[in-house]
Length: 502
Image 1 (tube, rainbow, N blue to C red):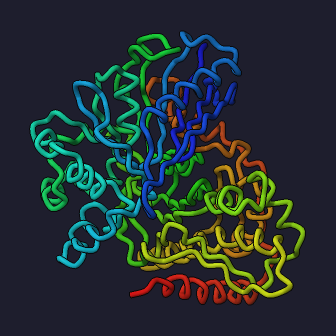
Image 2: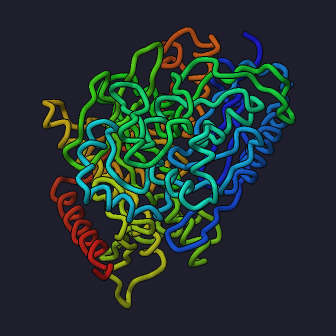
């Protein structure tokens, strides 16, 4: 089939557009960064106009690099930062407030109040999630409570809520479609993942009017067609959609029960396919929808580390000790290990399995012999330690279900290119770590889904055939070393969680 697929990967710090051939070869790729806004400590916002400009710019650049004609686009796939929340006016398409980003912690007290009122078990059983400000529901309520007249407009149906996927489809279609897909809906605290519908009782507890919510669709179908988009002709089908981590799971072809991947981006996210079985976590993970295709829902266990690549950005932008993010591997390689230095990346609290929004970042074990190289190595190690915590929790959940522990891990995302980090990860986990030839599997998953939705790919087998592993990192240490490392990490985490005054 002639033509190409366009994949939009709308992330936390930038938007990337990919032009892919029908056999999934990358023909062109471009990224446009945009700023994050931090109006108060713990608050993180995005200007949606800046997001949209970055998306349009990335598309323009990618098309130019690929040297293709936009009229030959077969379909568009979208993947996105998931829990980031936008509310806009249906008539003007103007957001009523900046988008509140998934990292934002402003609704911690609201979540705590809901837990104290005894609602945690209800939310957990229906959504698979924990009551944490990470998710969208309390963000929606906050915007409605803090924008004059918003509650009345929301109740009347004049406003629309969406995660970034919904807002992009609205923009791409000229306001013709207010939709989301099952994966993004499953991250809102408002969606019953087993019943497959918005839950009125949960919406009532969160004080979110049902009239705000988008229609929930599958991950591969034609939702709408482009209309009035600069640089694109009208009529291109928007045919694939999934939250970034589910898209990466799909892009890594984790189609069998037990398959797992970890994406190392701004945060790090571990997902494991559990098939059509909803597995409630007893060990601090969440249960989410992996994808919905052809009426069949596949679930996943997920663990989220809020800070991964963002820790490297902190070294670069906050402390100014490295010039660019890629410098960290060379600097860290100057020493054989971090020595006694341990870094806990709780710069936005701790996610799974701890779920402690009050934890704070910690750098400990410093001596007069400590060099910048030790700190850089400790920052990389801190990312890997968080994933080890998630794998241990996932293995405990597997054992409770009579399933086998993780046998190997597939990795992707920008930081997966760091061989030092990947080797340390394999050593900590004691399992092989597979890095694909294309580490941009988030965008690849969105393209695969769009291809399925538009009929470019006939089935999953065609996608599996296109997947390639570039390198496997085998563990090189013994179990005693692994235990010692994890014990030291555990002590550091305990200190990070006790640093906030009570």
